[in-house]
Image (cartoon, rainbow over all chains, first blue to last red; front, top):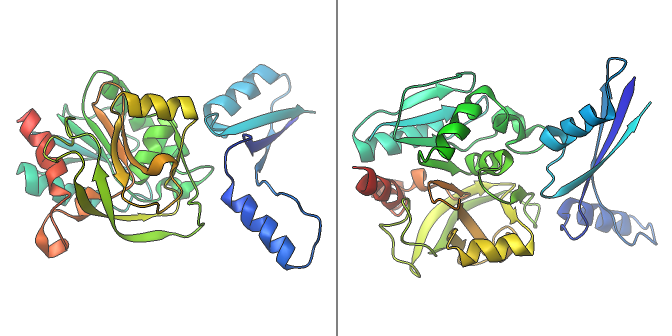
Amino acid sequence: MKARIHVTLKNGVLDPQGKAIEHALGNMGFDGVEAARQGKYIELDLAAGTTKEAVDEMCRKLLANTVIENYSIELE
Amino acid sequence: MKSAVIVFPGSNCDRDMAVALEKVTGKKPEMVWHQSADFEKVDFIALPGGFSYGDYLRCGAMSARSTVMKEVIKRAEAGVPVLGVCNGFQVLTETGLLPGALMRNASLHFVCRDVELEVVNDASLFTNGYTAGSNITIPVAHHDGNYYADKETLDALEGEGQVAFRYAEDINGAQRRIAGVLNKKGNVLGMMPHPERMIEPALGGSDGRILFESVMNRLG
């Protein structure tokens, strides 16, 4: 089974890299980009039967820094 | 005063830290590799600057979960003084020993130059040789020194005297220009500027030496 994990900055936390992406897209002539936020995508191959709770713990303890980041988990 | 410098793969200010500690304390610090589960009893532990584990995932994230840090956390919680400089500061926030997080500089530029710091707390173990309100000059060299914490945490830090240093002017976007933070007990200090690079006139100044002398004065 696989876990697909998205780690994103919390609302209200300034994202300078996202800002730079937003400006670059504007400079390239792409209109209508009102904001960009950069995050991380992590894919884990897991042994069958690994629980969502275990993946949640992995996120809390390492994959995300919950001071500044949120995460979401999809299992398949 | 016996000290130890923790060395991670990718640390690059460990030897500068060792030189500073030896010059000030007169004793060579023990260099402790990140895989050590235990090390000699020491009076002072330093986490040096650098790019430990290549800054993978987040700066300091891997180091904070390394074998040696389990022991460092245990000792810090028992009251042993711990100083984290630059990457060491990032490691300390990742362990939770210090509140907040260090994010990419707001300018996105790597900042590498001498900066003016305002001494905010002159009573701590690490800062008792300084005078609150005075400015000192210490170099910085970082890409991720933009200190972030939520408003309640920042208010608490300021209210409890846990802000040790502030940048005299904004250099990286850090909230409230915070450059160095103490834990509640005052035995853990994390700071982005490098005091170990400013320990004698030949290096451009001695303002950093006072930090190590402050610790020496208290610990003897």
